Image (cartoon, rainbow, N blue to C red; front, side, top):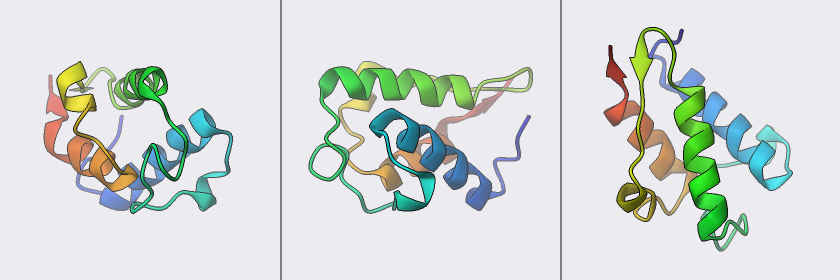
Length: 91
C-alpha cells in the first residue's frame, strides 16, 4: 500500500522502476529525462515500462492502468510521475 499524497515517495518508486528497466541506478534518474533520447527506451520498452509501473502502483487498495494511447504521450520520467499521481484510483 502507498500514499499518493506523498509525491516524493511516488517519484522514488517510479525512478527505481525506470532505472531497473534501463540498467541504471535510481539516483541517476531525473524527472526531465526523455525516455527515448536520454534513456534509450523504444516502443516495446515503453510498453514493458508501463506494465511495470502499473504493477508497482496496483495493490489491494489502489489500481493503475496506462492504456497504450496514453503510453505514447509519456515522453519524460516527469510525465510518468504526473500520470501516476493523477490516474491512480482507489478501489
